[in-house]
Length: 87
Image (cartoon, rainbow, N blue to C red; front, side, top):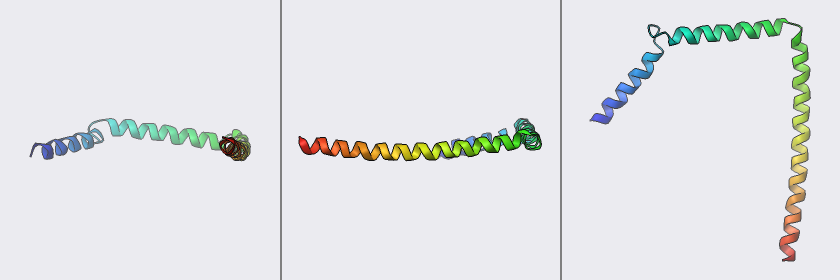
């Protein structure tokens, strides 16, 4: 009985937060418009190609790090197996 009513009340409260009369939807909409305008400004500026270059460099660094971690992990596993066999 009472759990059902609490669930209904909670859902109605959460949905009311995003109702246009509450004001949160206006704040959310304004924040999204602000974000979209910043993205558009960034893409139109000359810094766009520089950002792409940085993204490519970051991707290459990640690939090199993953390869190094994989190699180190394989070597560490072999070392631990050698120690375990000697014990």
